[in-house]
Image (tube, rainbow, N blue to C red; front, side, top):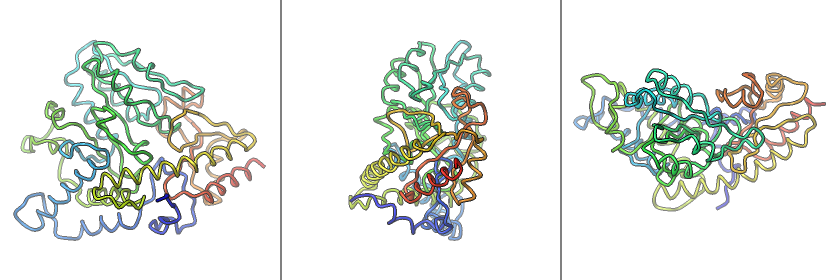
Length: 400
């Protein structure tokens, strides 16, 4: 079955606003079914997790379903699925935990392509431990982050490599599988930011070889929260800070306080929605997800080619990053206009395409864009050719 964006648009109440949404990289719109799942979970009988009363069992079932849904999404182990308030919060938590084992002179590797949430927590943790930070840079012309940029930095002192699955502004998709091979020639760990990648591609964390893989649900139809997945055996070796009465069980000991069951229910509903995008009739959720993401990736690739070409034909447009493999994201500036001016103009014609460095601060500075950055337009599954034509028309109006 061919993916049909028009078929799903009625599932998203926000699309009734008449807005054309190209701000998906910052957060997608949400289908009704996800809102309904959140509502139902928060008003039905609910208590702290246990198996004695009905309300306790409701909470327990939500958590179990959440872990299994996340595992199905990325082919991970449900026993290694950790819930968190945000990707940034979780990375700070894990950076402090992992840094407990670092010694003076140990090394970590970060990249200039990454969102700052996969840079700053590691730098700060390294400074506290006396570890050395080494930087891998991307090609400023192509936007590529070659595996060699990381592998040439790896030594026997390397303890962790933090790298993005897809650049937050340029969309560049590094060869994570190849990077993993290089990292694991030593005893180092690979920590992958999958926030910008997960909405656009089928993920197999086992094949990828990431020790930690995380993403945010609000980037693909869910509520504002995140998850990080690792092997339970790896999590078991970590000595994280926690309250004394709280459990030592994995993965619960990395989840602080009472979990927001309603949000977890919304996350499961979002993953189920993804599984149904392609109309697959396979029995397992994992198989349906693979079918849906394959159809979606083909659709977005074709639509993105059209969008990128049309934007490049507009006089005075400069685009940044042209990696061969990337997500459907274009980062650009318009000659004679500040990015904020472009963003505000598009807003007047009901087009959401925001401007800034989008927390990819090092990438923006490396490209010579300073902290101001550029305009970002990214596709989501509900975007159509008509939306792209509206975007291009809006840009042409500004240039004229």
